Image (tube, rainbow, N blue to C red; front, side, top):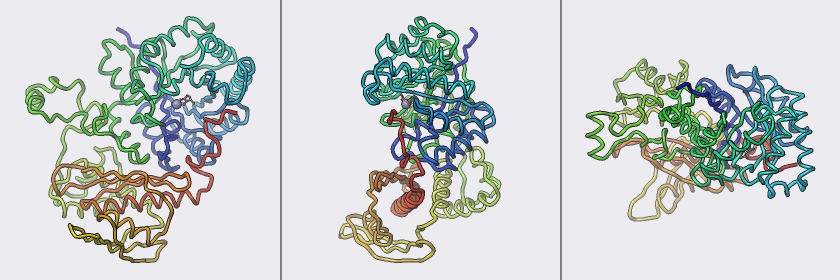
Length: 521
Ligand code: KIV
Ligand code: ZN
């Protein structure tokens, strides 16, 4: 059976980054775009250029640096947005303008346009975009709650005005698989000119059906799936790229479609997106979760030893999990570390390797066996510390036990100057956080504090994620250490450093976008 090609459109850097708190720095966006390109994503939606100076700069830079993928930017249905978008994407070898407007009754009410006025707006804006760029995508936002007749009418207008891809968003995750397939199929049959464009599906996961709805849309005739790494996105997120790609690969017998994705790169990019966005991947997440390939029950383990296919429909290597979890220890040398890190997807320059090797030795002194997950945590930690430009943890001790209050002695380096204090709290972490707050007074609110053991055993490292909010700005921090309280303080300090950076950036940065895609005009 010959396979049809499904185009993978990744919107991690636009719809994913829009998730509150998932803000990425400029350098992080460039890194993720590079990884998406290397992995074989066809189209990268790199941002929403009019939203902020930061978004514009990231989209332009990604457009300039990307070797293979088409680079797309988002714009609302007005000339100013579209012009700004074009300014950013035009540097790409293959640029695309994506323009959208909410077409459902609820969304039409926001700009207060009647059906005819909106139809006119769509005609004008798609024509304008097409005059700038040969590759134009148009989306009727909230398509799955738009009246059928009106949806057909506006899709036809967009095609006549020159749109080359028609994306059908299930903006609020409302549809279900049969309806999703049917909607695309009926649109292709009903709308004149539909056979000349590519139909695309863009699903949100509010009812947990984003992957199923996307695959169903393909069965209905869509040939582009919009998705994000780890399903990152607002609320319950978007369709997860790794899920649709692996579903079509594993069930090619009933879904005879191909993508250009090198699936062995999935695990690494999943970890990187999790690290830079500060959104941990749930352990039982399909494909990229820590437990996705773990078999704990005796029956399963027995079956797996006899024949891996007994309980495994894909091999860990297929998604980039190395088969051997080679244990390293304090006698492992620099070359072994370099090669192991490279296997895990981290190619380090000599200086960075030198720094990571020192950390590795320090960890090996405290922990007998170092597993892959320890090294990944170490990389996350080293990256977090390199971003700690204002505040650094110099030293700390905590006294805890059954007799409270717990106390923490702490020395921080703040903008080059050492400052120390002793604070108390309700538990060691609280005492330590209070000490940081005494040394660096701030009004940021701790929204989330999460601790995970990286490996098994009482000497395991803990990875800690924190999310903080200050006047609408959100920043996350992560760190790892064999001492949970130390990891907690380092993560807290990491988040504070990111908040300070964001304050300095003023209006630049995703949380401070001057417009949002929900502002319709
Ligand atoms: O969910 C949605 O409708 C969107 C559009 C902007 C395509 O993200
Ligand atoms: Zn969306």
